[in-house]
Image 1 (cartoon, helix red, strand yellow):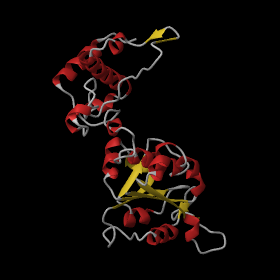
Image 2 (tube, one colour):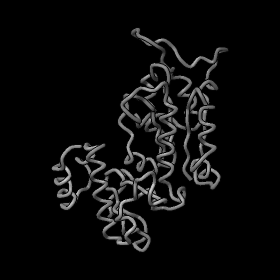
Image 3 (spheres, one colour):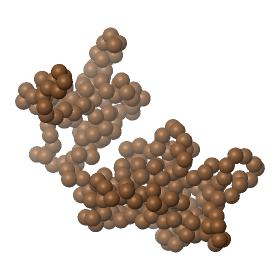
Image 4 (tube, helix red, strand yellow):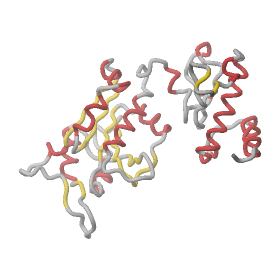
Length: 272
């Protein structure tokens, strides 16, 4: 069973998030455990102070190291390299962190225990990061008021990759940023032959009934019954969507010669 711990000054923030969707179902099925810990419970003054002014001057306040260290100690987690750190990843949520990606989510899905430290104010005393955190992650190139939203994003993205969390095991493989065909875990008989693994690309467009909506029809190829034609169409749409919205992904995606030919043709199309 995977275990997630969240350290925050706003524990109530997560209540609604944990009561709905796959997070709720995964907990009820006993597939994951989630603990939310209030940093103010690890203070020792009557004002329950968790922050202080930054050394060297500057705007805002900084989360103090003592409450965070005590909170981690209460969980049996010491500094990096200490006894008990095996199978544990302590993560600081920070705008200065490396980008959180699907690849990082897959790494974390293989970790027994994940601890998420939610920064606030101007940030967290850097000694917490240096002494205790093996990762510093950001969910995007923008600044939030705190790390709680980032913690929820990382927990959701990671948890859905755990065995048994999703109703269909292939759901987490055939989607944006997913793995290549060769890395698909589903049995051969269970793999929809009308799909490719994303291989780092964005997903293709999806359609459902009705076949016509406000004058817009579902592409004919999807209702023709030719699975090979569907597979080719979906791959082209993956490449088209990625080229349009996230061309940066093409530099690291697993592309075949046929993919490159399709991209050359798409790039040659007149711009709308």
